[in-house]
Length: 168
Figure 1 (cartoon, rainbow, N blue to C red):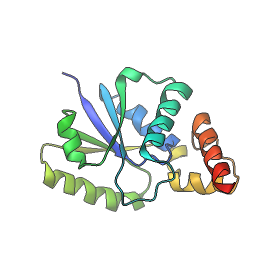
Figure 2: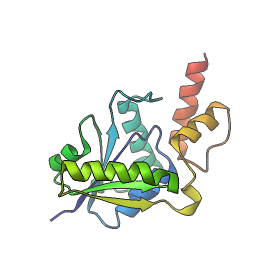
Figure 3: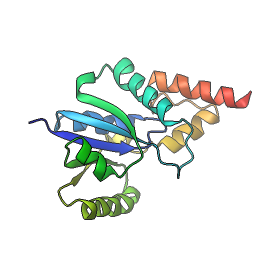
Figure 4: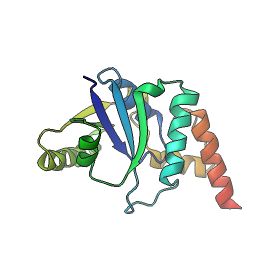
């Protein structure tokens, strides 16, 4: 039986922190479903289709990860409903710092109340990537800073294009 984990997030854009969680998750699961949130309550830089393409380029072109082990989708449902759809009983979540824990703890508890057969597994990215957030990556690139330590080459290229387009 294939073990599948759901890794939900906004991934706006994907960072090396997210990628660490995916790589570590692949050590435990046969397949990771990277689920790109498409709910309307956030102000995204990239729409869900763009984020999916960015993730595909980062994972499969830049990093050459196995396409058969990673599925990238968008969703606007409950994560627990997504688990049912993909026959998964595990939600992967990344933790960077203690400040993430309270929110993630509450989220895991709510998901558990919605479906008590689903567990949340917390994975930490490598130490050098724990400080990275999509928010900071966007802020640095907007101010023309160097983000090569934070995300992949194709992601950097698309971020630069996005901000140059918005300037003109």
